[in-house]
Length: 197
Image (cartoon, rainbow, N blue to C red; front, side):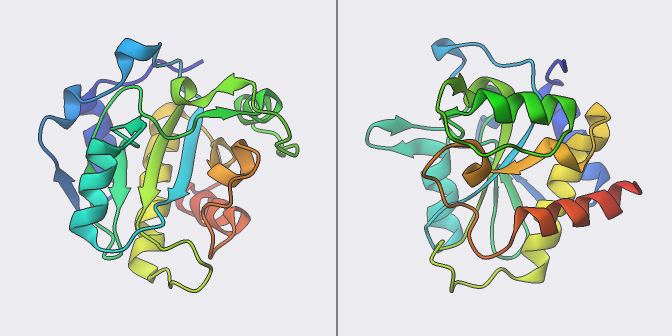
């Protein structure tokens, strides 16, 4: 069980990994905490946005869309590798997912198939939305992949987690395909190397 750090500690953890960070508005207090608890935190979920254009993508993730108010994540990782912080606390990113997957993340074990949607992931996971069309053709620049690796590793390092605490949305919620264009196994291997494990 891990208590979420303060917003300042979260920011410091990301900066320790050398990330380029933009603080967007009142991100420290922009959240959905009035809709349910935030924490304990157990891992990090990686998403793609199905959008293009950094400014538009960041604003969408900050504000949300019809029927899904923002923030839609904690940080937006754009094509150039910048991490824009748009919220902190409960965010509308993970939705309902598989409780067996959550148990595997907590125990840092191989993930089972995600075949149920019975557990509130917005309570338990950090979320990073990554600018990409999500069509399997839009490229993932190395700088962006490196930023995903570094952001996830920052939180793993802060909490003492291994790379197994980082999952894709497609591994959490049935029917999701994101992130599309790289494998989460390859990303976890990058994070493992970064953590020196």
